[in-house]
Picture 1 (cartoon, each protein chain N blue to C red):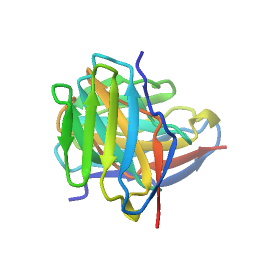
Picture 2 (picture 1 turned 90 degrees about the vertical axis):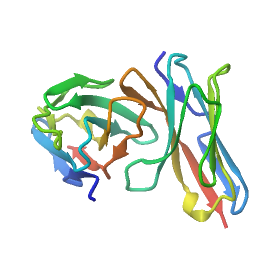
Picture 3 (picture 1 turned 60 degrees about the horizontal axis):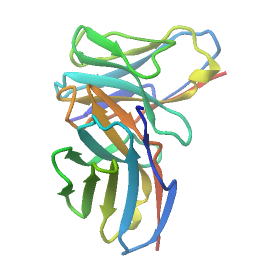
Length: 113
Length: 110
């Protein structure tokens, strides 16, 4: 059971480039979410999805897009990378949208030059 | 507000001692709380959770206490081991959003 898988693990981009961070889960979870974690801080919610075809914004959605065409996959797109988006990105999933612990991937470390 | 904060950024304990990590939350409408452990280079790992209709919950070597009157959450780790060294986050859920605190670093001295 792979759980939540994120790819790539590391990425360096130039300012203005676009990129998609991949997230896949094999637990048939309905709820998926993306967080970013900056040094010395907790995780901040970027976008989330309560099921296939449904997405919504979290605390810090600007500069990011998401889609949820299948239950398993929840990609995060950076439209035009900025240095402020340098961070570690975590994807998580849970059985339902609330009152369930979320399972996290191991993160994608992204640097924007 | 929508913030969850921790009192102590770093906690150092001797191996075998008990550890207590504290967390203050600000949203009185939050009804579900989770503690996560994060080791270097990894994603947060679920430790224990508690619902707002409870004030205590025990797991294996861990206990979570919830005081809704003062909006305070704590994680107690019994007989702390070197493998417990990590960053610990409390998180609260209200609506369908999970909000994290800043984290506490737990260092276990052998």
